[in-house]
Image 1 (cartoon, one colour):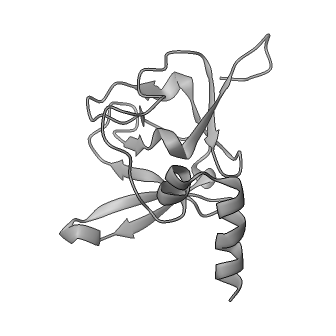
Image 2 (image 1 turned 60 degrees about the horizontal axis):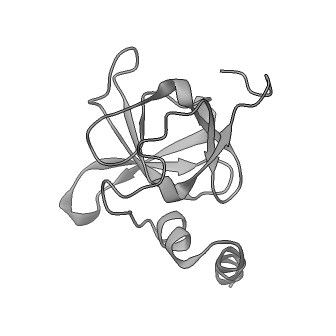
Length: 136
């Protein structure tokens, strides 16, 4: 019963597309996300709870069609969960603060981490760096 109440609350704060991705583990179409080509300096946070996830300094063009990062701001801000849906073995990236689905993590990223955090734009909000209010 509590889960249903939680879902009702999320439906009040997220639009239908955001809800589909963040709460129902959906994905946006490749090459359509608002942050795919964002080159501004700042911080990417969870759209649902504002948990800090990625620095723009770790964002790169993976060619996958989704914003990609090679490391999180803090390892503890993202939970890694096995995802065997659709007959695939992947690692799901989940916000540690609110449990929202962000995307997936792959082992084909650049050095130094070798990781590719492949994240839905709709799972993120971008906070642009202004006058030294952000540490990269």
